[in-house]
Length: 298
Image (tube, rainbow, N blue to C red; front, top):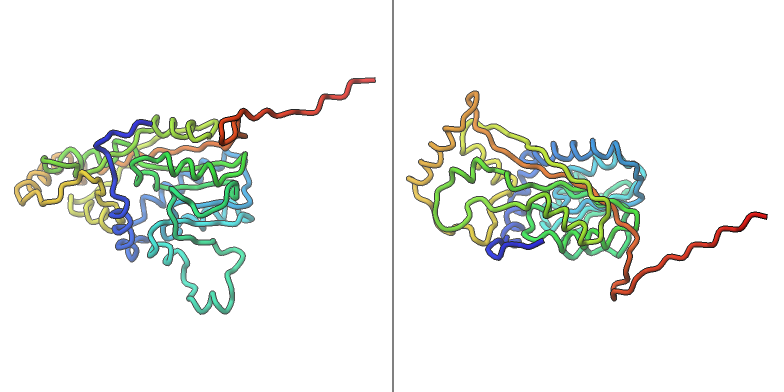
């Protein structure tokens, strides 16, 4: 996948935003919870029983219960790069309860780490689940390669992310000027190319649009801030647009009102793929598999 030279995301800024949003993460996570349910519905038609699974970009852990219901025997591991979110994912058990009672076997193992350098051994999980995380990466390839690395052969990656039409209404009305006021999102076909180049096989991709509605533009912007989902493009404008620019943006958005509400579109991309047996070694040599010669009949 070719990344445009002018497209880059400030991951340190994203981490700070998510860390600050931790106290509001539960109330602001309604879109992610809805997407998780739709991902889970897709699992109904896939035969796979992982012994250990990884939630890459787990946040405060809202998907652990859902995954526990679907795979009650599986050990769950969660990784997120915002430490305040990882701390909240530990739930209501206090430090002293964990110290005295130890971790329950059913508790998820939680790690503060980077999806581009997962602190996990090679081939240690049978499933990777990632819900609305890849859209925070300008180039998803390093993270997808890491997900491939930690999967066993025959393991599955299941993910969701946001596509280019996300917040198209907001993008269209925001004040003009230098910089991106709504950062870009990666196309579904480019993500499919990433999966194949990373070594995944049989990728399946689909897309749908989820439209939320708001009474006013301020309500949408407030939800985005509470979720930590603010613009982290390195090309974002550093200054204010001025009262006139924002007044024009509100007036333009108001022209989109339907049944008294303002729409906000989210293009949600779903995908899953499998880790196939490698055809070459890491140094480029071909892998040849020998099978026993069938016994000849008497």
